[in-house]
Image (cartoon, rainbow, N blue to C red):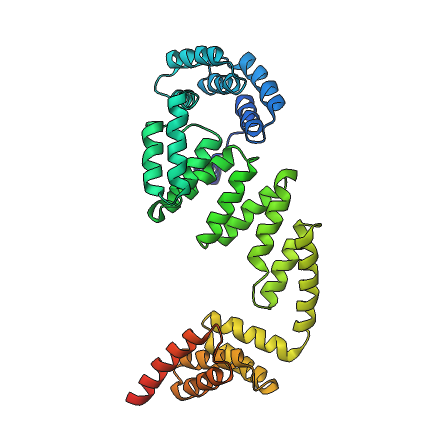
Length: 356
């Protein structure tokens, strides 16, 4: 009996702590997603089909009324749109749906369009903070949905202190309306410039699923990987790119580059050099030194390998060898793009060598 009681207790406890399974989206949620997708991709037929069903299922849902309002406004039916806005003000006067719709209606007026044009001019002439202030005054705290929201948060992203906030808002909009390729393009570039590469590639992969966004996604993706130093990592990056994209100028260039890199890495000396350079960049001096010594032995005039070897010795605290290799690298290539870094390291190591 005790064993049976314990088992029941254990089962009950297990059920109590089990995470709740996320509820499947309702029919209304799925249809609203279709509306947003139709708006993002300018598929008015999809919007109308979804709205027709929504108005049968849940006609008083503020999001449904707001969607009908936007549809009428796009068709130029100002009176019909105003009726939906008035209805929304009665149904949900405090809702985001009403506030956003009210702003959208304002933007359809001459004064609203003029104020929006002023904010856009400020944004395009490098006055991001002034532009955001103008947008905020116009929107009164409630940016409209759709392309204007993307425009607003893309402008906010130009303010360094608010870039993270803007990226998160653009990610939210992208999740709600994943077919907006202009948004995805901007979001991916923002993520890459913020050193959030994995997230950037995830957005490009999403963008590549649509015919409208595929070419743009391919160009941005290849632009992010084509200048990687030759290594196992660069080969993997090219293979990943080619597993997603199959045609276009960037694909042809990537195929040629992949073949060349695989040929280079088949050479033991080249592979040792590539692995050594990558190890130095990762701060792994112990691993990089023998590989760079092997590369330098094969080509004693390889300034990049010698400079990296000097950097590796510096990381390890071997000042004499760091100085010797950095001096050789600078003498071999006085105009290298690495010269500022090598000169700085040389000064530091000479200083420590002098006081030892």
